[in-house]
Image (cartoon, rainbow over all chains, first blue to last red):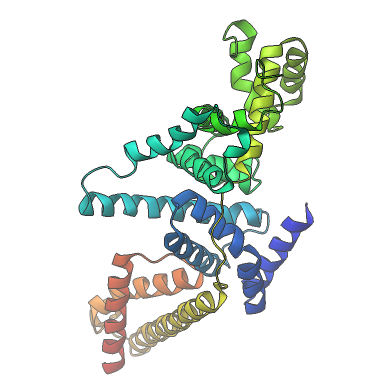
Length: 205
Length: 160
């Protein structure tokens, strides 16, 4: 077992015995990762913070049910990922009530497509902020399952099997989600990929 | 870009798990062998790698103060609630045992003489909730209504 996994396990065992210092250590060590995950998934700072808080409270209330053979990191993100899904669902309900017209939709296509029309400009024309926005929109445009699988795998370092466990899916389903996520990202990432290409064919001096 | 014929079409499904190191060894070896001879798939694999690398720039949450003080305060409230429930359950169970013993010792018909059938019907609920709380169970809205009912029941037990 990796030291990181060992540490999570040890902290959880201490928490199960009622050691609140261990709980504090868990929150402090993992809050950044959980907030990042929720933020990348939900795209809303406030909601991401709520999800992170709720995630740690679930860790606390489930402390005596936690099985030491379960990998803490995977389990933590299983909770966070479920709470994110709940948040997305209630967000969608809110939106339906507040703004019947679709949010994002055309606007996001417009923005994500914009740099593609400027491929003639030099690669460094893609500014850091623009680049971040492009990535954000590309990921936001994925289906919820694709996005969750992608974030868990690419950012939280969960293996396909762990992602499957966290999402309650089969290994095969996770593999397929990531293949489709990559395919769906293709067009939206194309301007960045072109900009990053060391020497694109036909553009060589 | 990628030729979607024969092995290449199959390769399209395997390239992502391949670069993620998630293919079984035999399949990974087959893909590696194919990439060595197929420039189109090899380019596609390279593009996947770069796409994944690009994602690293996806912004995370802005830095804020630690959540710990808020999480600590809320977890203390949860613990306090659990303690109350455990006491309620213990008291209710003790009371039930006392009644049973009383009627048993006094030789009266146990089932007919118990004071409040409603109360006894609810005892398992009280116990169940206390153990659920102890086990760190999750609470839903309807649970909270039941908990309220349980507290009212406690009041009745105490008044009895």
